[in-house]
Image (cartoon, rainbow, N blue to C red; front, side, top):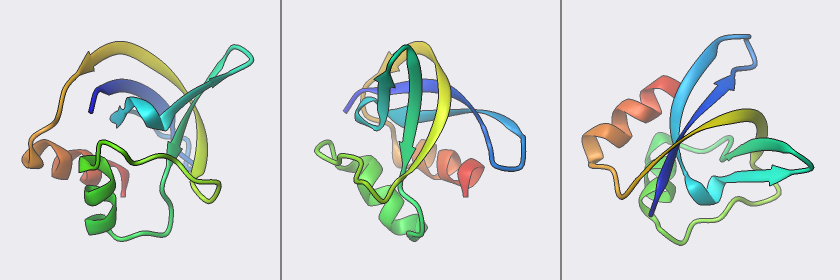
Length: 88
């Protein structure tokens, strides 16, 4: 699954750069949004990140973001775990 580097502002106002699956990034009326699963375990998020068919649901959070347009293929587990530790 392709991934994209995005910039987000957390609910506490922190600016972060995170990597997310392309399918979790949506564009509407000129704005870009990151969809993120909420209220799930780290294990479940890992499963969703590794599942190339995972799609955001209505229950996922929506965060305005900007994309860096850097895309690459599957991430190794170590990278996924680091990525998750930055978000959770």
